[in-house]
Length: 145
Length: 275
Image (cartoon, rainbow over all chains, first blue to last red; front, side, top):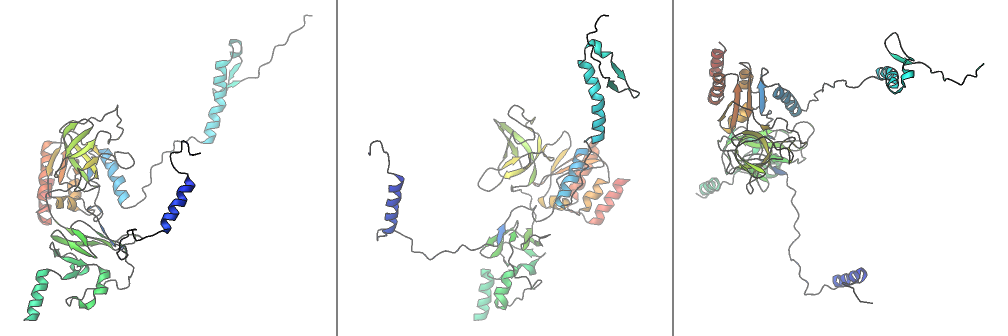
């Protein structure tokens, strides 16, 4: 049913196109030129001097007048020379041992915070000042004798 | 008669194309054509009896030759458009290509080039952009978002009359030049508003390139005098700042004058200043 069909089906469209291509009649226009081969151009035009001469970075500071600019000078000029400037990687990471030591004591201090008032007395202090939680004895019902 | 006529017409027509390699570091004039090394082999001894120097007869691979400022491509040859000395640089490292040829010329008028770092003066603030005078035919436009850490709420503190150090992102003869104060990663890397005080003065473009050369003795000597800060703009503008006004003025005078001084005269002046 062709009701509500705005256009032709995909299939019918394809068939029509193929038929059109097959029929190349005299009315079909084409350019009568020899095939133009694109010449491979070996010359590139550049208008910038920065490619020709290795110029230094434009901002400069001497004898510590502007420390930030002096840092920049080192960075930018090293980039030009393609030298790997070793960044001073400051060790911000804490070693694993130190981390474990901190956590040991942390358990005691945080635990003390959440313990009830009666249990706080059970927290003893070590020689180093680290708080160690002592094992709590659960109070059971004592039968009167 | 015919021979003489032939030679004169040749020279008048300017058809003599010379090999680029023979003209290195010599003065070239606009209108001259230069042959690249690969074409010398093809032309052979037929071209006006000039035997080009064969410095690297072994290379047959045609790398890409870059023609820099002052040269244009005309067919397979280079056409000179500015008068000056012809220079050449071999490609460094493992990069292929025939190197770079350019003309070392002198001029005072700056033409904006993409990627150049320049010093500009803010002349107007209209809506979202600043108009910056860079010494070219048109003022460049600088968007307020083109600064490090700038957002729509957090506008940069730029007033009319401020000095800006930035680079061009768009610079051709058909459009108004546009500049920015951040690099491709979004960092300022030294660009932006140049601080208070100091002195801005204008020099020729050739002097800027001479001072920014990697082996410039002038800057090394200047740096030993006293603490100072210099910003070079490729548009011929230099901004200097030192601790006192007198030192700043001495520095400005030295930089302006060193274009026309010989090395000996310069050393004399520096030794006098060091006292």
